[in-house]
Each structure stands twice: as C-alpha cells, then as structure tokens.
Image 1 (cartoon, rainbow, N blue to C red):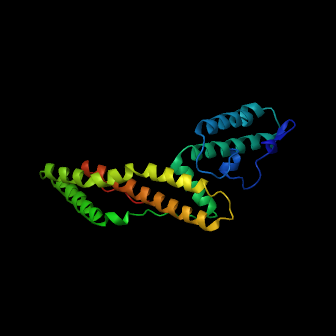
Image 2: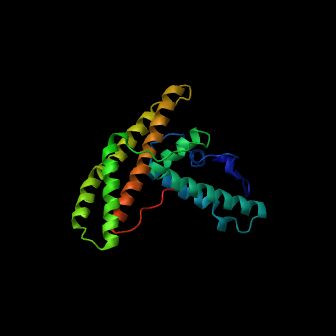
Image 3: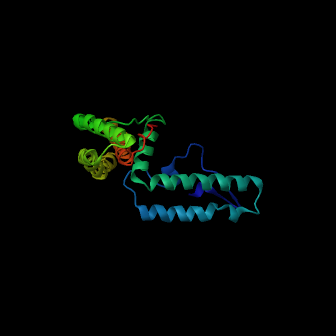
Length: 211
C-alpha cells in the first residue's frame, strides 16, 4: 500500500481503484476472511479522520474518502454473495444487470405456490378458516427452502472454478464461470423473494414488491 503514504500527508487511492485492489487482493473469489478483517483494521487506523485532524484540508478529505472506500470494500468482500455479485459487475464493466431468475426445473412448483399463497391471502382477508391452506403453503414451500439451502455449496463450487482460471487469456473459461455466477445470483434473488412472499402470505400480508 505504498501508494497511499506520502511523508506527513496521505494520498488518495488511484482513480478507479476497485474493492479488491483497495484491500490488496487479487480478483479471486476465495478470500481469507480473517486476513481481510486484519487488513481492514490496519487501513482503518491508517486513514482514520482523527489521525489526520490537524493535517491540511486536502489530507482530511483524502482521509474521509479513503476510509469510505475501504469500509465499503470490506463490507462487500466479507460476504460471499456480495463478493460474487461485485466481481461479476466488475468483470462486466459495471453493467452486469443480474436479473431475478426462477429455477427452470421448478416451473410447476412455482405455479402451485403462487396459487396457494393467493388463496391463503384471500382466506385470511375474508376471515375464512385457513388452517388447511396454511398447511398446503408450508408443504409447497419446502422445495424452495431446500433449493435455497443448496445455494451456498453451489456458490463455493463456482468460486473454485473461477480461481482455477485466473489467467485473463483464458477468456472463454472465465466467461463461462461468470455466466454461471450471474445465473446463480439471479436464482438466489428469485428464491429470496419467493421465501419472503411465503412468509408474508402466512402472516396475511400483501406480497412483497419486486425491486
């Protein structure tokens, strides 16, 4: 991190510094989280505004900007899903556009669940008995909860695939992994929304708005 130390002043990170570079990491997805935390604390102490309170105006501004960058970098990179989404966006030039994506093999389950949650909401709103519908929704929800619980292992597998082809010259292999990462992240976003819809229907609340 020599580029951020200048005599009694501090220098800003170079323009366009990404989160990996800010934390002194290569663009790899398997991260030593303890080392990441240690680096964050070291940089936080170095750039903390209190340490530069008596410096000139430029140094104080740089202190704030550097602190904001490393804080955002740390919060993003310490979470595997946020890290993956960030890398996909970074490798896509900032235009990844990861859309919510339903698992294609669950088409029939999706239709059934949508019908059941709709019926449950109407029953609860009208005051009609709903114990049977609640049980049906809970049953129909199980495949979605199981699919969601399998996502972390699938992500870890893709982390290994990405890190095994770090050479930019292997463009086809890297592009294939990026595509799989986008699809998996999109699937997770869909499943999280479905699970939120399930939970809200059981409480008689309106369906969550899709963002």
